[in-house]
Image (cartoon, rainbow, N blue to C red; front, side, top):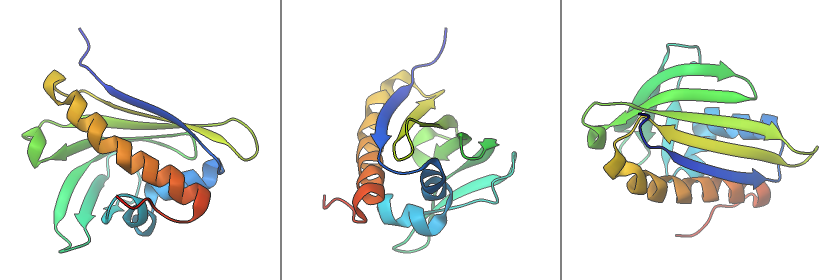
Length: 141
C-alpha cells in the first residue's frame, strides 16, 4: 500500500528555465517562500537546507534525489514536525507553450494524518511562486 501524497498542479506564465531558477536559487526562494532560503549544490546525494531569513536558523532539510534540469527536481524533506522521517518532494515541469509551463508538485511518503497540513502549507507557497513569476510581486497574506 502506498503512502498518501499531497499533489498540486498549476500553470504558470513563465519559461521552464525561469521556473527552475526559482526552485533552486536561494535568493529566489526567499522571495516567495516567506523568507526561507534554500541552499544546495544540486548534485544527487547533496544536502538541501532551508534557512529562515529572520535569524538564519535551519528550518527544513533533505537530500537531492533527482536533478534533471529543467524537467524534474526531487529531494527528501524533513523538519521538526516530521519526527526525522523524511517525505519526498518532486517538482515536474512541462512546457505547454513558449510562455506557459505546467508545474506539478508531489509531496509523498508522508503520514496520512499530515496530508492536509502539507496541502495548507504548500498552497500559499506555490500561489506566491506563480504570482511572483507572472507579476514580479508576491501576495500579501
